[in-house]
Image 1 (cartoon, rainbow, N blue to C red):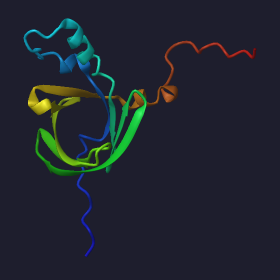
Image 2: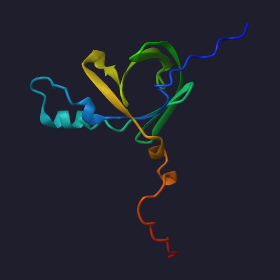
Image 3: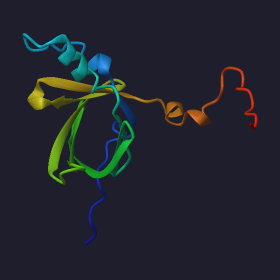
Image 4: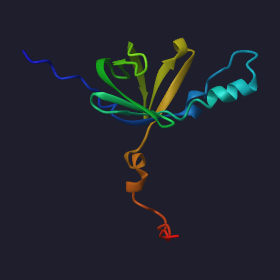
Length: 143
């Protein structure tokens, strides 16, 4: 008997970027949190790019790239649950992803913060192939 095809969810497929502004829209830091610590913490967000294809999740954080296999284990009208292995530890985990228009969010730190990701339009993935709207840059001159 052959193995059934992996389940996919088309809402997930594509490229997504961490959305720092939306992530921190309703965030309330703990009382007494120094402003510098909050700035440093917020600086961690908005950099992660995730590309989901039919079987692999590709991540890029400031040039540190990983690819891990995943499978959809459940889905409903507003969310999907994927099973994947952590790239660094190899530990298997379940990730619950909640869709909200052109965004999705995941709970972090036991639910104390939700990180939002926004869909990257296809033309933005590879800027060099996007149609130009302004004048062409001047040609490079040999030195």
